[in-house]
Length: 239
Length: 239
Image (cartoon, rainbow over all chains, first blue to last red; front, side, top):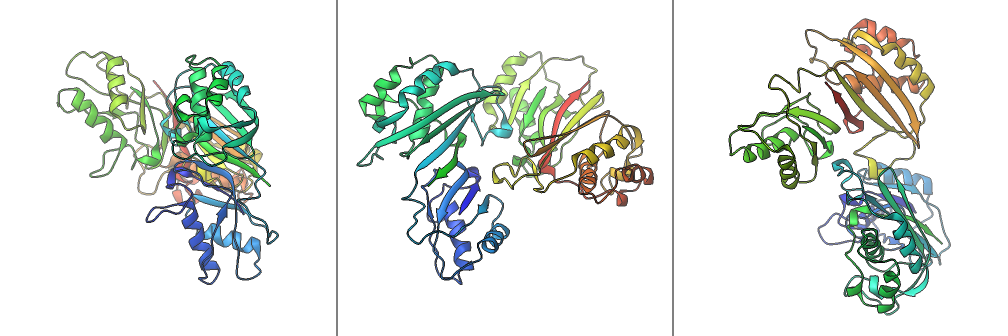
């Protein structure tokens, strides 16, 4: 299943007691459509509160063969407009939307122009100029396979913090800096900590080469501020 | 004063008891900055609930000479992020932000692509193709001075319903149809009723020439459905 959602309307993807979450809202409806037999939704990964998704992917098991297009339409009719199911297709029983991810792309939006209340939930309202070409220089040190411990949320280190970043694209379009990052996987806060560090470079507070050093330290205290969640979009997941 | 706001966060511009409105939020802060002497904000006109503004204009009187830039910064610090004060300048005592309007431009956004939950509050999610060139043809009948009674909200007719539309620009950009309408003034729901009627033309349900006939009927029952408020933006006000 491929779906988009407006992160500003949810307390994140993952189920949390009593709070509105993307997973809870979809699971509830799938369970209804499955004759009240509990359906569990396994996504490519969680997204944090306020983070948006253009193309999140998830799989689920149903009691019986379904007409995917009919289920898709029923879901979109029952959903309240903050999640949209783009497509559903049947997959091999062994397929896991979580474990079989080959590549993910995140996009981050920074408004470097005038504060815009209309987009406050949809781009980081940074509202000062940034040196984009230095940010591009700095981003090159992050490409390839590295231990990204310096960019992981405190207390969220995994056993294995090695990830491979395939591509980083940074461009300025109408006062919005768009940062696209593609890799084989991302750790908690990793994109937002990378963006926060690139912003420090763009502010001329950090030389691009320092990003290489931060990476080598393998300690969160060296990377810069976590960029706000509202600017982050899960853009693509590939299998 | 020039300011922008996110209409999705307010019950419209105008003060209403107990509801969050743009006017109430700004007046309260201006009154504080005026030593608690009540300040009244006179805008170029109201905007309805959920309608956004890029450049609304208003005037107010202060007890004493002010440093406009200081007041602007104080306001932006006190506001909660859903309104942004872009500029403040002093004007002649006789100036009225309401009565001296020469020209206003509204923009309306229609998403004709896939439903987008991330922009559901910021563009009408129409999500089907429309015949843009027929809409452009139809819009030409609205140019110039006319009695717009057919396009006014029921029960909101004024004594004088003659307005002059100077320009209508319609273009398609990345699945979003942008309709820009400039005129000397607009009646209640006038832009949204014009857009709703142009959509009927774009659906091939109404021939462009029919718009001329609807105009000549001077009766709301002939124009089509009011387009939703969320797609509407007050873009410019000129004096």
